[in-house]
Image (tube, rainbow, N blue to C red; front, top):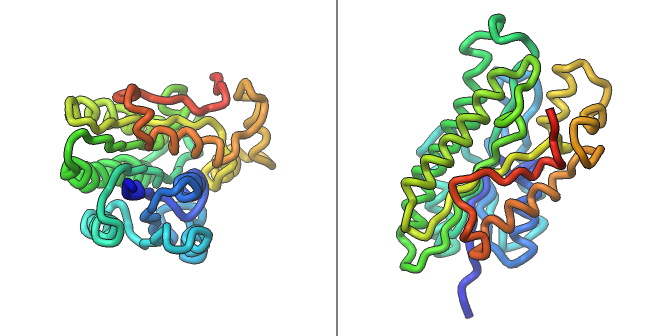
Length: 262
C-alpha cells in the first residue's frame, strides 16, 4: 500500500486554509496545519486563534498536526516542515494560504508601514515556504509529483479601490509562482497560484469594513455566480491541484473566482 500523501498548509486556522486542511484530510492526506495564532498590532482586525487551529486538527485525529508558526520566521516555519518529515515521513504538497489585508486609503496616503504586513506575510511568507518545502519535495525519488500552491486573489488581476498595496502584493504572488515554476522545470514538481474571488472569510469581512459596507454579501454583484463563494469551494480547487492528476497545470493561475468581473 502506498504511503498517505503529506501536505503543509499555512494560514490553516480558518478560512480557505482551514477548508483546505479539511478537504485534504477527508481524502486520506496527512497535514501539518500552520498558523501564527496571535494578533498583529499592525492590523486592524483579529487573526486566527490557537483554539481555531486546534479545532481544525481535532476534526481529523491523527491525520492533522497543528503547529503554531509565523511564516515570516523561516526558523519556526522550518520546524513545521521538519515535523512533516519526522512525523509523516515525506512531503508531497505545500499550500501557502497565509495572507492579510490592509488598506482603505488611496495610494498617496499610504506608508511603507501600511504595506509591510501584506508583503511580509503574503509574499515573503510564501517565498519562505517555498525555500523550505521545495527541497523536501525534491528529496523524494523520481518520478516526483510534488505540488506548491499559493493563494493569490482576484486582486492579482483587477484593480481594487483603495487597495493598491493588496493589489501589488497579490500580483507579486503570481510573479513568484511563475518564476518558481520555471526553476522547477523538469523536476516533476509544479507551482501554481489560485485566485479566489470574494469568499466568505475574515479577509472579506475586513474588506467590507474598509469599504464601510454592512455585509460581505454586497460584494456578490462583482461575480457572475451572483453570490459570495464559500471557503470549501476554493479549497476543492486547491485540493485537486495537490494531486498527481494536476500535473499539466504549472506556472499559471487557476481562477476559482466565481466569474469575478471588474
